[in-house]
Length: 87
Image 1 (cartoon, rainbow, N blue to C red):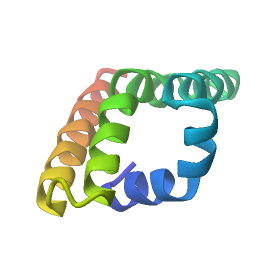
Image 2: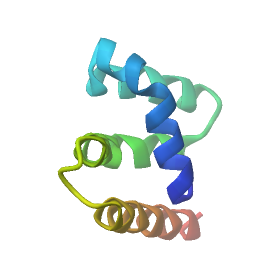
Image 3: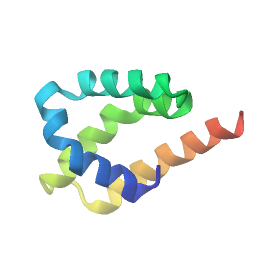
Image 4: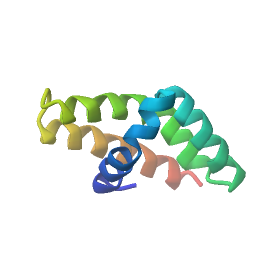
């Protein structure tokens, strides 16, 4: 998922995430992803979903600048790409 994808996903799902909390939300989401054999994406979200959510909240509250958020997203994207290369 590219940087705009993460931000859009979090933006559009933030109410749902807040209702159930991020851990429960990720558990439900990754269960579905695993059912459709999106193992790498599920693993990536399990590893990085919570830190990304926390950074998104900081961004929304103007506690970090966009550049910091996108640096984190770029890191997660590169880690995901490395995982994809292994397969």
